[in-house]
Length: 75
Ligand SMILES: [Zn+2]
Image (cartoon, rainbow, N blue to C red; front, top):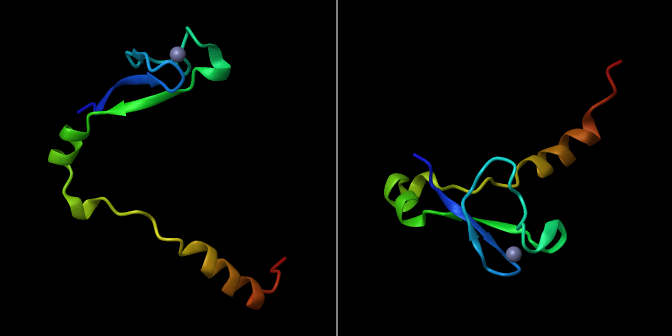
């Protein structure tokens, strides 16, 4: 169920076990030791059908522009 294998420091490449509260590499410090989440891609690929992976379309920004010119302020 958990698709996260662990965390990898983008600075030194060290792999760490994901745990609550661990956001940065202890060796590199909070400034440089940004941790990348390592997912179990093989497992995700098997459990999620390709059609389900849909990126959200940028529909809201276009609709925003349309509605803003016609909407009067209802106070
Ligand atoms: Zn590091």
